Image (tube, rainbow, N blue to C red; front, side, top):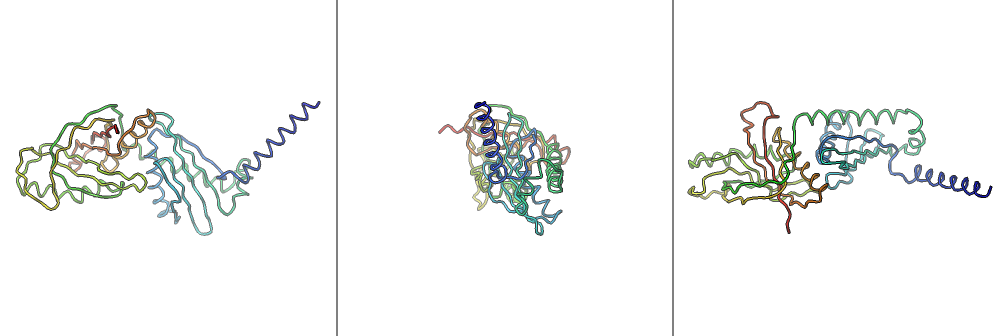
Length: 305
């Protein structure tokens, strides 16, 4: 009899603790979880792009409260009197699948939502399910536009290049290259310097927290070329790089999706990499055609220090 009382008291205590945690301590009112066959960074970028679209289409104002490592982002959303917090956590399941956990909190009606969400199909619950479902559909549509193949260990060739140094946020790398393309190609043409291969992008600095890049937009040329000084165009040898390699098929604007795939792979296999991808673009986007046939080879070198 005494043992039964202890069991009952124990269960009541456990229930009380769980109730207090759920109603007063738990960070979110409602959680939605799903999986996608892509890298965590790709989903992270998708969240930010989706946020911009939401601001335009639904008159919602988003601000980022915290973000880190391309696998966590916390946002606040305001729309009229509505104030919400969205906490997105991306967890790598394996080399190709990421689990997404979305924690949702209504800052004005949190207690009510916590009580009703497990039992009732409230407007809050229906609206959040629809919102995240629409995000998921948009993400999956985006994933149809490119492919990433992890090749494993790879090695680039030593190459002599003419280059210009550029800076931009991660999302505007390709647009910035296109905007400055005439500077370097015009210089090479005006000085009768022949391009001997497809262009490269050499990342010198990738600030993951601020999502900014410093990089060289490079064109291979003959090493014996006579150098003519220029304020913008410089020359160098890019040495052989050994590291993890991926092949990306898709528009060059989103080639960073391969970077994220390599980072996830390296994290899963305990491989240390420098945040300095080297991209070799093997198709000419100015020729048009099917973007899924545009090929880019990417190596992120090992961090051996």
